[in-house]
Length: 150
Figure (cartoon, rainbow, N blue to C red):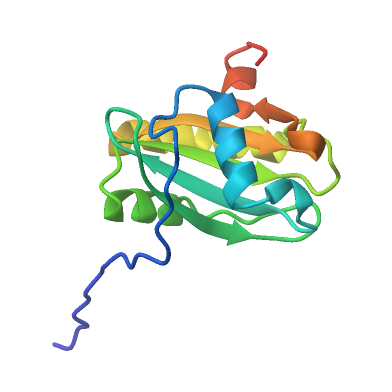
């Protein structure tokens, strides 16, 4: 019988010093992403995954998908593959809307529900899924699903 042997490893692309080592709020996330990724300036949707340890310290950041002007195809397996390789206890997803409107689409909310369900099974908490628009305005998909405003 033939089969492939695989070896997985995470490669550090760059090392960043972040003054606030813990993520305490959505505002901390938006500031971090604005400083590092400049998502609000991009002309195509881009999804970034922030991996956290159990004390909300950042252990890694990875761009996990890039799409068009109004979509970004996300594979749930990629989210959890990166989280597992980073040894994360928690994750935060962030993506931009090139239109400038930070209101999540129905597809964004549906994706968030799928990730919430998968995160329970994987025991990796989805802390938030944030959509960033113009001028660093943002909306939390998780809070919207729970019927709260941010």
